[in-house]
Amino acid sequence: MTTILGRAPGSTLQEPVFAVDGWAGNAVDDLGVEWWVTKEEGWSSAPPLRLSLVDRPERDGTFDSPSYRGPRVVTLEGSAVAPDRSTKEYAKDRLAAVLNDGALLLPLVVTEPHLTRQSLVRLSAETKISDRKNGVFDFSLQMTAPDPLRYSAALNAASCSLPTSSGGVTFPLTFPLDFGQGSSGGRLQLENRGSVPTWPVWRIAGPCTDPVVINPETGEQLAFGLTVQSGEVLVVDTDARTVLLQGTASRRSFLLPDSEWFALRPGSNRIGFRAAQTEPAARLTAEWRDAWT
Image 1 (tube, rainbow, N blue to C red):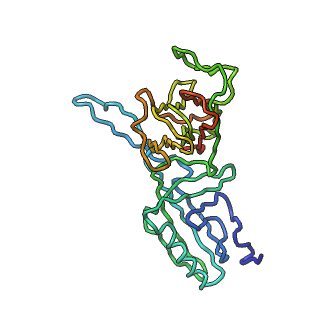
Image 2: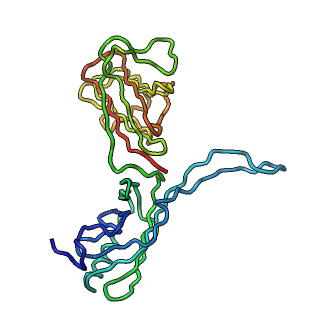
Image 3: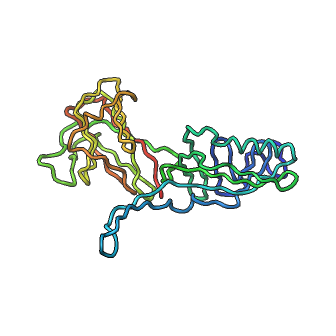
């Protein structure tokens, strides 16, 4: 491997490294251009709050209401150092093409000293380029993540079958639930290593009749009045609030009235899986990313 300006292409200049759409800040690209990020706003800090307070008529103060997070806006400013003037022009073109397709949300992956996290972003302001001298120019890149949370770059996954022996819950239900000591399957222990709740995707593989995914500690559950046939998969996206059979056919109308969407809280989450009858091939798979503000 050859080195240019004393640094190998693909090497890290400093952390954090910001990578999006084939470009990386605080790294050396394949042309030997050093991309230095000298100022970052919006990634390390918490996203803005959105309040909808209404003034109390003829009285001090406002009526209280919940606060929500606004979108995360990330701005990166810095300097690019190219080995020669011609390479500098190529580097400008490369930067101008980053997030050029406004229809796509693409992952901004940030490698920090302690974690690698990501958010889905799109360009939200014009990319600014300002020449300095020889092979150097300054730049500014702004992108917005509609979902303000920062997620682990790695996707977590775990799965289990239905309970296969006696035990199980007793009626009437009391919380926290106990699924019995004699059964195997029907349980997941999911760890959210982040600092805020994260919304999982549940995949229920058939054959399975009237499946239920439940948090036995809180009683929150997603229960479905349908049969998932052998070879079929019911995909439940708790963030998008969708229930799709084979990825296309909506089955949200089969969600039973006592169901509620629930997230994985920070730390350990005990999850139960049950159905109207035991089918050895039935399986529940959880997919989730750890989440931070």
